Image 1 (cartoon, rainbow, N blue to C red):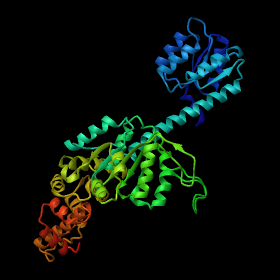
Image 2 (cartoon, rainbow, N blue to C red; image 1 turned 180 degrees about the vertical axis):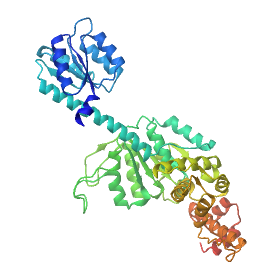
Image 3 (cartoon, rainbow, N blue to C red; image 1 turned 45 degrees about the vertical axis):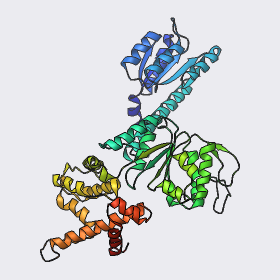
Image 4 (cartoon, one colour; image 1 turned 60 degrees about the vertical axis):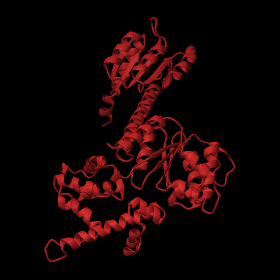
Length: 462
């Protein structure tokens, strides 16, 4: 297996001494490498342009007008990933240093020690293989896990993406608003992974899921012994996101104390770990998200106005899925393809009448609900098309409605009434939550009178 792997690797030897070229060629051929050799700059360039070379060994001193340093520059320009080793005499150490600055991986002193040269070649080829694997795995991970495509055909969302594209390479703080499940984190990932910070970390944290003390520790890290249980130093999200992006979800749920500390970090671009005194400077682009009305929270003295202005440098609002009808079918097919691949299924389509059903549905859980529904449908589907029974079952089973098709159970009217009651209750409940139980605003949002809303609240015991 080892020999087979090496046979696929090629080496270019460039030296104006025929004896060295011959000896090194035999050495590497014996080790299973495919060997190319050249005595000057021009021949080496022709070889690199016609063949895949994994590693090049160049003598700094070459006959002709161009030396090994110039050849190094040309080879690295043609293939930036090419590993280049330089051969040099004791009198050319300065040239070797120059070569390292221009991208050479290492240099070998004359007289050449064959064993040392082989070790150096093997080591650098292993490093190249690891880098290639790392690049591949990173891309695969981004594709399969950290999805950052934003699928839409909705004009309002396209406008939001246009704003994101304009500012994504700046350090400006972004505030993303919208109902739960509309894709706020997906938009944050889109901004990060299509920006000049894409090689840095994307670090996320949900501010609503943690107590104040845990949230502070998660954001800023802590020193060993800072509190009971702090048995070692811990890096916080800000440090982990240095030169990258920190995504803070549900910022409207932070306490005023945490808000004050966050504001200070945004103003000073530095912080101390919990229990520490050393200032830590960071270069982090912050993207915040919330499904709450921050302006209303400011009026209620639950959110700092100065922090709001710091977060809301760029504002992006994602409309709910019910207001993005163009996206429903588009996303359904997109998720179908994702879960086909994940579960190794070969479902070709969704039955046509289901698209009408999807467009009539209100989607209280937004895109997240649609994704979950398609996920279930793919798992349950046994053929090549998602059938009405499978998918309609997902829609109706969610309501807890028992459809007895024997003709001996509920009437059609009773079943429909149950379904209407279920979704009416959910819609009113979500609207009340969205407007912090304010009945006037909820009634306005639902386009009903306060009296009608009060009657429904009493009916559903909300």
